Length: 521
Image (cartoon, rainbow, N blue to C red):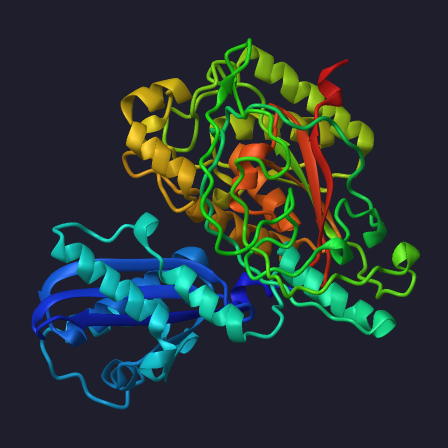
């Protein structure tokens, strides 16, 4: 399982280049999980005319700063193919060049010296950062800056790692990593093992309908049960039912199509009688872009009934996921994220908050409450806390997506004003809304990091997370090992309850999704 943030280690790989030395220059940096090799964050920038060494130092500074944003208390293992930077930052070589002294000093201030170690690696092992640096220089040549949505560096690096890597061992909630360990344990009974890929984010194209933060149409009904310490037999998805894949997805919602096939065009959204944008009905596989699956994947072994021969994972960390109550924007189906007006709960939303508080009091399993910093969540959490006699802790990582210039607009209004940006957003999780909003890939990295910290800190406890549509859907998606486009295929009603349990071996069990029974009394 993941270690607490105070002792978590991150890998930073950085590089820089100059086409002329000095000449047009750029840098790239990537933050990796040291256990799974998962890409947690990327940074790249065209910096104008500079030397190779200045670009390399700038890449180092950027990588360290991104790592600090993810985990401020982490220890960092820096890997670079610049002997000069590694030796100078390790204190073995003196820094003489006037352009590099301030950059080295800046790098040294990001983390305390005792929490950063440096390693030289050959260039062929630093291809991810090198590719980012070259993408930045290519963008500069076109008179633009590097954009995450246009980058293929992570995909190229992931493909190379997947071709050679052993089965992953990921953080809590990564279904692929947990399933790999579960199958390994079961292999002693069946003589079969199967590897899967892992990762917090995956590439996706051809989405069919918008997942507009606080304004998402419904697709699921109500289910049951959360907050006990039952064994994995109650998992909504049995790890042994998952099949190996070279992509992030360990469980596909419909049969995967063969790798290398063309991209299907998304069907246009349809409007319901209430004006809600909903996805058109689809037969499995129809006009749906799915992750590639390995044609060599062996079928997963069937577990012994009731997991009777499996290891005892103990009581999981159970997250009860509560979406806040309605605001004035909710029934109008407007984008409402963390970059807008921060609306309060409406009268209907306040009634919903009181109703969910009574329901949670009746279940009696919640031990702690953690809330997004946004007003609508704080108000919902306060109603529950008052009923349960608990305090509320604020967690920045649970905030909603920043929808940039789309905040407060309906999907139709965004389609009219920013059609190209909307198409790009629907086609890729790396694309951000107009005006500097957050991509779904960025949100997934933030939510996954928050999940890891909270799961490690609350093992064996039931914690209420009061948050928003995108964070809840992302937690469910990652727990199932589903592809990014699955965000567009979940319903999450205002004041609904979902639940995910995280076990010590890294497995996750989705126990509840979009329960609104408490609102029908």
